[in-house]
Every structure is written in structure tokens, then in C-alpha cells.
Image 1 (spheres, rainbow over the protein chains, first blue to last red):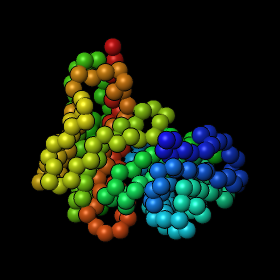
Image 2: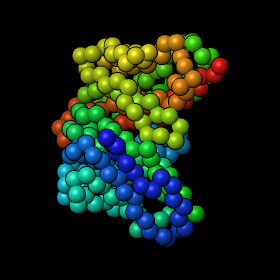
Image 3: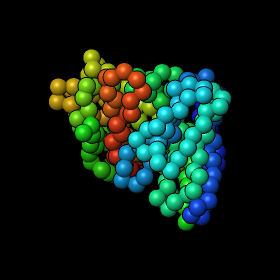
Length: 114
Length: 114
């Protein structure tokens, strides 16, 4: 049972380039989330999904897009990367809504934008 | 504004010693409080989840307490081991319907040395 898997684990981009982070979970969870973690700050929610085909904005959605075409996958896209998007990105999933259900996190994807 | 404050910011203890980490929150209405352990370069892993009616919860050598009246929680680690070196994150969720964001603390960095 792999849990939550993120790819890639590391990526370096130049300003203006685009990329997609992939999150896959094998626990049949309805809810999936993308967070970013920056030094000296708590995790912040970027976007989330309450089921296949649905997405919603979190606290810091600007500059990111997401898609949930399949229940097990949640993609995070950066259309035009900026240095402010240098961060560690975590995907999480839960069986119930985040405020009541336990979150299971991936190992993180470290992104550097030059 | 809903906030979660953790103290101390960092802590160094000798292997075998006990320690207590603190979490104060202003989140209201309160649903539950969680403690996560995050090893360096890894994703957070859940240690405990406590609801309003629970004032103590244990997970092996980890014991969390909750005082919902004073809005304080603590995480006590007994007989620390080198593998306890990690960041410990306090997370509080609101008791409202829907998928509202969790409020993450900045974490306490614990270093256990031999």
C-alpha cells in the first residue's frame, strides 16, 4: 500500500517556465489537497478537491491550477513559475473532509524557481 | 483571526529525557486538534487527534493533552529517542460544515542528542 505518492520529488525551473506536479493515492479517498510549506510558516492550502471532477480554491491559489480527472490523481500546475513559488509542496488525501478526517500526506516535492 | 501558536520554536534535549511542547490556539468554534510529526525531508505523519470531549490521548511515548477552556494543548514525549528528532506541528480545525481549511502552527523543531 503506497499511500500518497508525489512526483517529481525535486525540480528546478526558470522564471516563466511551466510544470505539473502529480499526486496519486491508492486509498480510495474522496478528498485531496495541495499545500505549500515555507520556512517559518505553517502549511498553507493552495487548492483542494472533494471528489473526482471537482476542484476548489484554498488560501493561496494564485498562480496555480489543479485538475482531478481521476479519483486517485490530483495534479497541480504552474503555468508561469515565479521565484515566490519556490517552496516544498505537499499533497494530502482524506476519507472525510479535512476538518473531521485524518489527513495522509505525501513525501513532498521541492521546487526551486530561479 | 484563527491562529495556532507553538512554543518553543526549537528544543534540544538529551536522549532519554522527557520534554513537553506547547500549542495555543484562537480557532473558534473548535472541532479538533491534531499533532503531527514531520521528519526532515518527509511529509507530516499524524500522532493524535483530539476532539472537544477528549483531554488526553496517547500514542506510545507521545501523550497529548487538551484544555478546550484555555485553548491550550501540549505534547509530552517520554524517554526521548534519537528518532524523535523532527518537527512537531499542531493543527486545529473549525467546527463548521464543509471543507474549511485547517489552521497549522509553524511547528517546534526538536533535536534529541546522544
